[in-house]
Image (cartoon, rainbow, N blue to C red; front, side, top):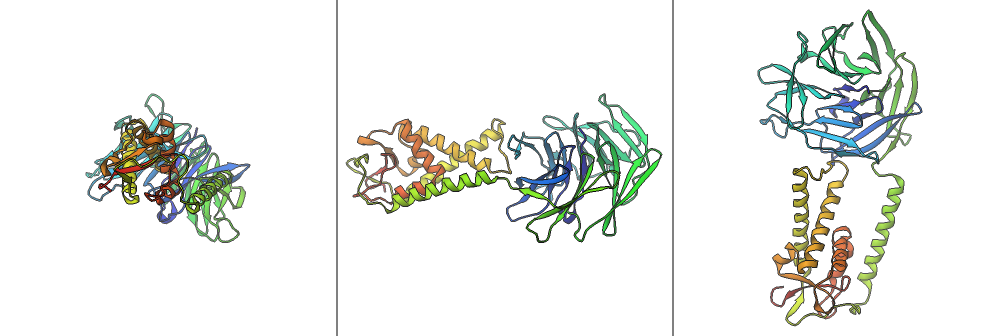
Amino acid sequence: MIAALLVTVAAGLGPVASDESRGWAVLESTPLGAPLYTVELRGGAPHLRQVGVLPAAPALAAAWDQRLWMVMEPAGHSEQIWPVRTLVLDAAGLAGQAEARAPLTSFATPLGLAATRDGVFAITRDTAGRAELMRLGKTAWEAVEAPRGSGIDSGALLTLGGDLALLSGGRLQRRGGGGEWLTTTIWGPEPGERVLAMGSQVVALKQAGAGLRMRILLRDGTVERTLEGGDEPALAVMAVGDRLVRLRREEGGGARFAARVTTLEGIEVFSGPVSLDGMVDDGAVRTLMLVLSVIGVTTLIFVLRGDAPGPGTPPLPEGAALCPAGQRMFAGSIDALVGAAVCIGLESAGLMPLTPVDGAAGLAVMAAGALIGAASEAATGRTLGKALVGARVIGPGGRRVGPARAVARNVVRFFCPPLGLAWMLGTAEKPRELFGTLVIVRRGEG
């Protein structure tokens, strides 16, 4: 596979990365974060899909084989720790975190990033001004021997044919599988040009008025093309396979983005609005609306129904009272924190990677809370939160709830909170039951 990295993107939104099958780009910033898009060519036309939302745009990025590596900005100005995140496309085409990776530490600035079949490489410069070529290992970054006289601090990292390449000072130096460097003399790049791999070629790009000048760098000279521009500046410029894709914001017409796609010969094969898919397809939205409608109708029925207790409602034991709604909500919050703590612990141990981009972390917390709550209530009648407020759950006949009722209760509590709240509106005289269970406290504790 052939991957390319373009470090600079207009408007400071973040870098883009691409390989032979797709590109990755941050094209806008919202109050909720930086949406991450993939760009694919289908029948020659670009197709955008939002695959996640990042907390912030990365400083550098590189792509290889459906994976994206990102170097994030340091959390503080005094602490030079550059977190490195790895995202991978799943079967549904959404990006999820693949595994924990070592951060770049003790470096003033990472200068470049490239992903190859032999690993992920970065050029860094420390506070003393020394530049180094590093390779990402399983637990830490390791120094790699750079080609002699390469001037890596001013060079551009590329991926050609799956191999790492360094372009600097008119020389293209390519790293072989055994670690040896092969040097080819080429023309360029010139000052102010941005370099990327496009198919099997290396091209240099530079703004030329409203358009873009593209030079194909060869051993015996260059081939120059002038590409037409548009009224709006490009948000991102990337190579997807042997096509150059320029994305810009679209004004009017119902589309958010437009694109121009150009071949190495300078022939424009596409110009116009691009199709855009969100993180959730239309079928999933319709299913979600149906589920929410059912939950809403069910909640309304239980809120408006008569207050007579159902036939499965257990009687209040002597000396007990219904647990007040405030205490139950406090207990529920504690139980949710327990689920979050378990998920964080599993993620830290590498047993359950969580994605920072598609909401899976929230679902994992709810699932963990429901599982732990069900097991605790079935075993003891209490969760940690209920124990803190002195409450417990009873079933029919005042007995301990069984596994089935415990699971049903906690699925409602964590995944259908409005439905769970409906059962908190009962009184001691006319209690509302949840699957034949009640949450009680000893009289005087509520």
